[in-house]
Length: 400
Image 1 (cartoon, rainbow, N blue to C red):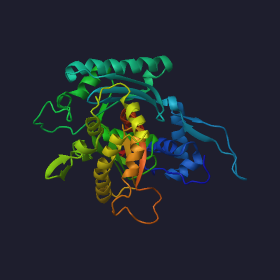
Image 2: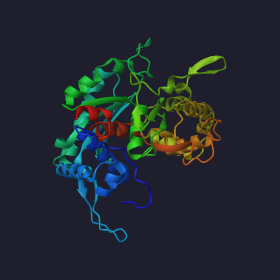
Image 3: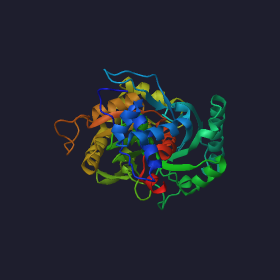
């Protein structure tokens, strides 16, 4: 428990028939703040002490929370803090990208327990699906070996891949669009092959989910995650929830058209890792590519610095556009870019362009570094089933 910082929590409701929502509110408060007493939870969520006590008893019985060592604060009565049980739930996260697939297992609080990857063969879903399903099963098998009750507490499979989803594509073989995978019934195939509930989001949204659960967006209500990977996207956290749009394509900023030299080019063709690989003439499937790029960036390789100088101009514009449209508390640069590259990219983007976010009294920087890790997308994909099962949602009130 923390006596100094304010407790962040969504308000519950004491009306009848809202127990499912209130359970989620309690779990969310414990995730955001760490261990809290029942009295702290009641004050933060505006639920009655009796309601909180009843919910805590249910959550303890379900193996989702546990009591910690009693603490004494001042002259008052000692209190017992409660915290989430990491082994209370598990989820699998899957990333499908142009050349590689990654799968991880996480627990209730977002700890990564297992991670595995495999190269995707040419041929699209016809050859790639068996590889993906085997990868998922390998992760599940190892999880079963490590945690006896893991399979019973597995809440789902979250998948992530590049968007946009559901659009007509003139060039079915366009490597940027992954057209064959886009047309493939991925959700149905994964569900049938694993027996799990499956969700799908684009890679930028998955990164935002990871940042919201365990990263720089943790506890923020309004943040935009500028994803720099093989492509570019923006994961939108608005009003404390991930916003995906009408068709799951919100934040596909990489498709924005920029004009240079009289020609229109998509942003992700100019400032993504794919454009960097092309600039360096390296194979995206080269082994240890992440380490190679990171080392060259750390050593101020002139070819990488030249790419950074050009990419920073376009990404600086992207940040200004994001701030103007969404008014976030902060913009978080995240994705699969190696940390040395991302750090130099953020430095090169300074000073940022003037925008409505450039004001005195800010508590957060306009632009900050988030997860720069090839596993960030898979981690966010795994966080989605956890969030779907336990985060406060208005739909939970309707279903109670």
